[in-house]
Image 1: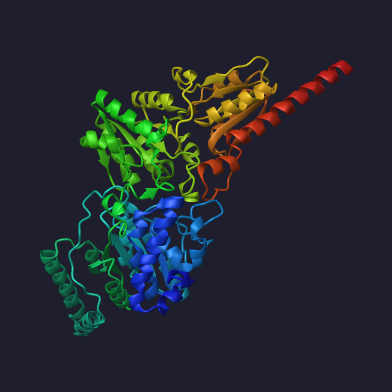
Image 2: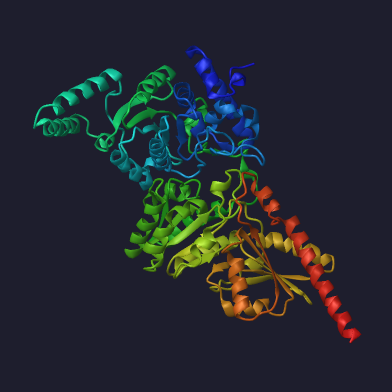
Length: 634
């Protein structure tokens, strides 16, 4: 029985001898490696914070002392220490643990997280709330250096000095976010100023100076300004001090004794402090240390997909961008620290001057793209659908209203899978379809991905290209029909069909297989691939749906505000009387599960569509039979 088996709460970590903590770290690292290579998940980031996590739970008293993990993808060791080791084998699996902090799992998870750069704001708000209610306990925010590239983190930092709260910020510096860090965030040089002796001496001197009659406060201000001037000479990077923080570091984030000593001293401080911790992403696993970007998110058992026949939509997008960049000198691409995840890594290698990695800064990415477009370039912003939610105002104010031509490649649209609620790409259509001048397309296969991207680059105004985290499903010749704005194409047109299926994106091919099987059973159903979510050609949609008894609308996104509701509104305005069924995701966000499981639970996989279409066709047939009997009876 190892040490990890004896850990049921952070209190058990406190009971261990300091010499045993290194053994515990080794066991935790082994457990993470074994589980992630089986289940998939975030590997390199979690291996890098094992010692830091142990030290935090050794020194602080969670949950009385709140530890808030930024993004939360590095919280695996935290989960193991806080009583979830027995369930850890099911992390990121349906019915198992989330891959991110989740309040419903544990009292030690203070916030539900999943997106970057939120920890400082939430930690500051929690600290202020506790102060106003007279509650004790420290608040610690663990934020990576990559997360500091987001403006929200700086907004929180500037608010700390105003509130004068003793926030503890752990700056986990591993030189990485997901892709290698970019920007001007430098390695800060400083000295350890967090000892009690130093703080006591400084408070004593300050008190003596202030007590000097008439000139005390003015003299103290001069001393403080002089001290900052001296620091500015000898310590060129002094951002945190200027923002009112005590600065500690850099310190070795894998040296447990040093971490324990510094954290214990900082815990007694009653002023805001930044502890600059240097860690190595992927520490303890050589492959992850050498290539932390490749091992940021790991698929189950690290399989090699190179032998698979069909590429992913992301790979097709990346390949198409390379081809188009050779044709268009005005084409550039932007990513927010996700060049590999969005498929832009190949273009970045071949033509690095054409790809801008702005760091974890989606809002800046969008408005930067607007500036590029205003200057005559054609920018393609490649961002995960869930992260584009962070830049809705910039899309409206800086791109849509002035009608700048910016292409948004929304990867991971629809059901994303094991990352859970925070990463589902269900809301891009409701968020963006009503924006002025906007176009939203959804390719269903590789051929459409290539042609739709070309169409988006040639079109004017903001254009959104949404595609899932999946491999291309089909390449039917019908998919290569020319694009007409607002119009789709029939993939199946049968004789005497009384039911029509309108499908958006790759689900059109699952629907095609389902309707093919129903055709064999005597239920002819037509299938129309919408292609566009916005704008929709109202006259075309009304004409396509007329003459059917029932229409089923299928989309891989939120039903509320989705394309199905748009079509229902069109048919109502045009007085097209037809039975409507909208298939998509309901209001409740599903927890972690595979994409296939999520689609199955929503009835959007082939089997679910087959069942639904079959019931609908049978119901229509029965109604028609009743009408015939009624006519004969008369």
